[in-house]
Image (cartoon, rainbow, N blue to C red; front, side, top):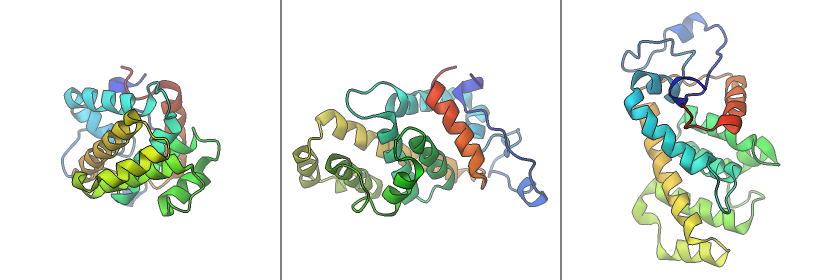
Length: 203
């Protein structure tokens, strides 16, 4: 496993323009080789550990009812709503790698979860996630009631709210420090294979 539980990222040779793109602070590393949260984790391993452990618990660790793909789908959806290019692209790839319908389903959910071919329970959980993204106070008793009516458990509702809240933080962390988000989808696909096999928290 890479240092700090971070995904090894094999970036293509950067163009002159890409080499000029740097984060708001000096991370002391090649940001094209360590984009997004990967570079931040190496810059500040003391905070990277808890952040990656939280991601592992939320998205990769065993769950009684929600698959890793479903949980990654929630993360990708929230990241897309927040316009966080790196997190949306990476977690879309991670979700696609773990869902039978793959990337077409992820893209449909990101465009319009109400029209996407997901179950009624997942649709209700995505509505809760979208509400969290706007404001925690927008998670109404009615949204929770609707999710329960579609079969959502209290644990699923809890974890949906926490995934959505956590990804608002991760998205703002990555974008607030101006990190690099590679345009080449191949890097996200390679990272997905690593995440599926190893998760986020191993160090």
